[in-house]
Image (cartoon, rainbow, N blue to C red; front, side, top):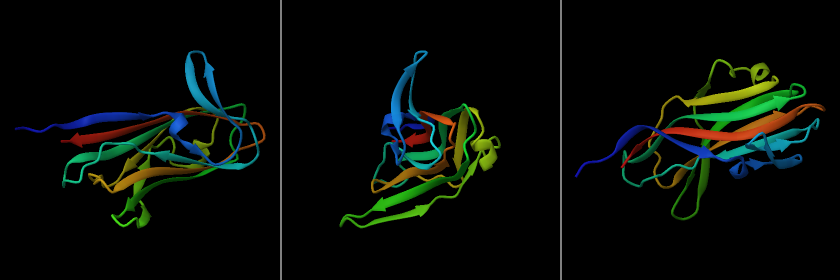
Length: 168
């Protein structure tokens, strides 16, 4: 028997699956597009993006995330700040213990500064994992973003795409 080793897998994370900590968010349908819109407000908000990929308890099987693309639009005005972009690996044990640690990553050259991330326009921010690994069945990734809205900036969250290798 053979196995599958596909390095071009991807999975879409709908904005409805992304947890939002604060603000007024509205599911929006406009020009045949679906997204979650945050009403302009001069306040911080957090986004927690789960990374749903197939996992496996066997070593070197399952999924190995290479990168995560986050799609968003900023209109009307720039944000006040977009300081934090972090990928965390969380682990649970058979007895319920829960631990987490930041994963070393890099950002694409168009989003590697807060000034670039907070500017008006359509954005595709790519987070690349420095040392990808196959996740076993007790570990998972969550992207954590901290955004500081402005009195005029409207933030449209389109979603995220996870790019990974799958081996089964």
